[in-house]
Image (cartoon, rainbow over all chains, first blue to last red; front, top):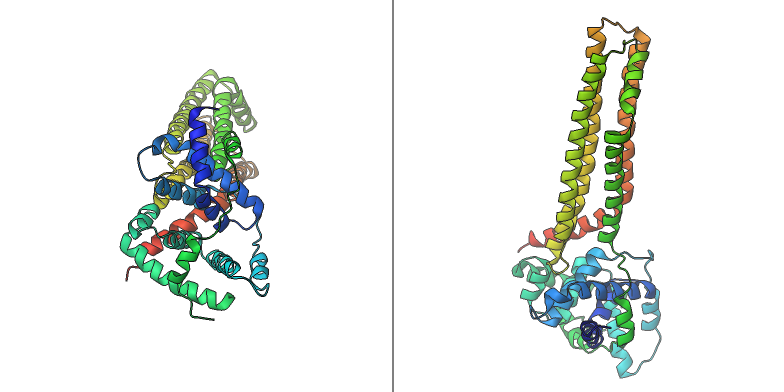
Length: 164
Length: 224
């Protein structure tokens, strides 16, 4: 195992939360989620040399992860699997911590109902990326990213009211 | 239920407990696994297509004996075989094969260049366009081959009728109809089969990319 590989795997291990979130948001089964995680890691590895020192780690990881999920990834399973979240949501009384987890699950559920590009916008917005970064990652203008996000807030509100 | 406000969910989202799933050893193991993605899928299929067509071109250029087959067809139409006829056809056939090989070589270079241009670190819109451009090279190659097929058929048909005219051969009505209909049916059938093949092999991938590109373009055209 080379020093570069060790350095890279440590970097991924420490930042795997971001990749797990993207993998979860763009797949409907555990198998696909694991496959997407692996594909993102491979794409990050391939672009690791060109990344070094070029930009922030989070910016680079975000871009590669979303690009992989939206353009490259080949799913194995076709059918959507949303019941697990509904079951979780309707499982009765939950403690405070569970309530937060419940909110997160509900967010995943409604965001997954959006088209792939819109999902990326919402995820970056929720993770507090500035509009400049959102627009640069997608290749759209900053103004249009803002306009789209405002519309998406309304869409998500309707979806939440319908599915919560 | 209180009114939904996405901003109030931000903190919860950012603080969500994402359990680390993989340790360093598992991540290192992933680096040795092979990638399974759409671009690779297009690449391998396209390489197979290039090799098949290139192989056919090379075979017919250097090893094949199909010029004799054509002369035999002419013989069945009543054309007398002569050295002049064989030389004229040999020259014509060489020109057609050379054109075909030049076109194939041009596309192989272009295909490789466009593949190298695909950069996962580009922005999403650019990346989709890079993949579509890469795929378009294959489409153009196929289109060029269909056009070549039509041109070759046309040239060979003109050559046949010129020879028939030079040798004062008048085909009987059924033979002429059979000859022309045979050429047209074979050409159309080849084109339809090639078209169906490409719809099946690349249809799904391009549909998804096109949809995402359309979404981005829509966002950029919806400014308030």
